[in-house]
Image (tube, rainbow, N blue to C red; front, side, top):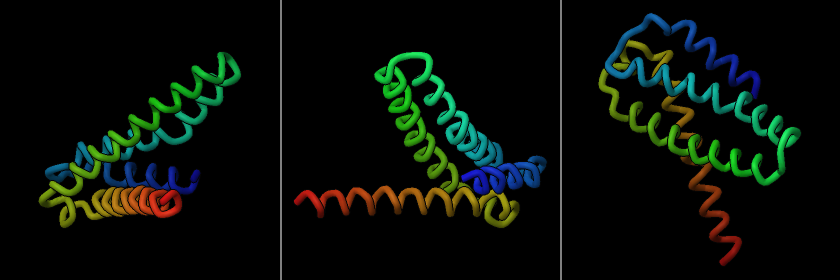
Length: 118
């Protein structure tokens, strides 16, 4: 996952000055994704060492809920963008592909869980 974070950092670096109708939102989504990756995992691991497991688990659940909300927001921003696909494809396509793959994985996992427990 470090490689994915490096790719996201590269996309942000290359497209920082680029503009389109949803550039600020897509850049914010990428930055939020970086924050919800290893810093969030590190924070939960640190909480396990400093506090009880129950508190760390609660914080992890809150991070997961925040990540789900962030996924929904990023998907909405990406799918309602009008000209980012043409003006800044390096910014648009990673967000689009990531959101599609994550939604596909979530729906597939839910469907498999239903099939297994039925």
